[in-house]
Image (cartoon, rainbow, N blue to C red; front, side):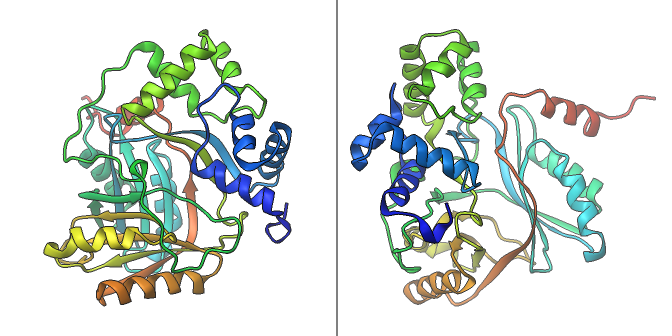
Length: 351
């Protein structure tokens, strides 16, 4: 399924499965009805896309903060001769889901999460010391303007195209978010739905059997998680490069504080922007608004950034390119690995 040989139908399926997967007993049949395809045709397209690495995973996408976890983007300044070993230390943290080398003095960038009751500052301080970083800057989300990767598989969308930011792409954020009260069954459902969905006509019946509940009960629980905003959506996560999106860059913008809440949503309105946040600034880091852009080429990314600059009038910015991927995984919730890491790395040694 090389990108250039996708039929219109195949591209339509791969677009739809990223954007809205039905929470229904027969979700592939429901998708097919929307797209004018049979259930079997939809399953066949997704199966081939997974087999060729275009689709990385089809599963529930939960909201880290709404589940009570603390999380943050982190920028580290590491001696270039030691960056690979520093990245390996950071990758060992089970809450690190993404870790990249970028073309800046702050050259190592990672996202980290820790469970309810833990301190993100303590976790990052431990990673700072263990990695031997010269400087580490904690960059948590202050305002979330958009989160949602949607890669247009038709190849028709212009780099400077705009699209509406949907409600599930603007989940709630507050400085402190209480962990929700979850039943033991809900925890097991969340753990199960983090895994890849089986590509069969009634996939949720398979999941329900594994959980020891009925299919209807599982669908109701999933809808409850969605309504409570604990689950942002159920969707496919694409392998960007295999899907034809060879370039990605993080545009960081020095936006005056009084303009952030006007400029941020404007930047988020560009289709090429998958993530848009306001983050804290430091004496050595003046950039307050972050935009992650994806393109089929570096020029596509640059075109999107140029359009944003022209519309907003923000001219002080940096474009940080990913030059090496050290880690990219889905964060796993409610596992024992985090407690084990804390015991090994945060618990003071006894005499």
